[in-house]
Length: 122
View 1 (cartoon, one colour):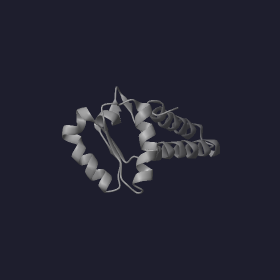
View 2 (cartoon, helix red, strand yellow; view 1 turned 45 degrees about the vertical axis):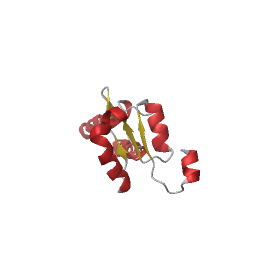
View 3 (cartoon, helix red, strand yellow; view 1 turned 90 degrees about the horizontal axis):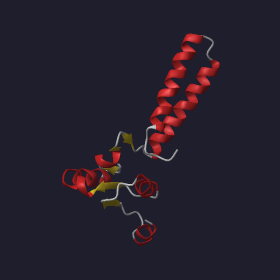
View 4 (cartoon, one colour; view 1 turned 30 degrees about the vertical axis):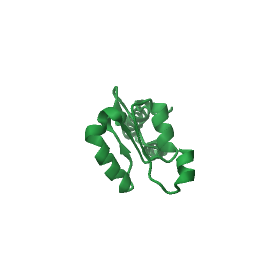
């Protein structure tokens, strides 16, 4: 990534690889890559990923997004979920009604499970 960024500032980078190890995918995406497609998915997903990257979106193949019941969350999605948890926790503290407080706690648990079931670093 560093070499590509030095050689081609502003270049849009999409990885095409057979490696779906979560750590490497996260490293690529968090260090500036706009996409990551597995070779096994390339036949049906490479062109859509290229189009997504050219439109300024992330192009990630389904083999990376959904693996063994886990989900890869983007840094933006993680930040949104964490912000939602914080907002709900503040709301819970301000809530007087115990029934509503229990519903908020259940909602917080749902949001925490999203993070826990993801394939992102904890």
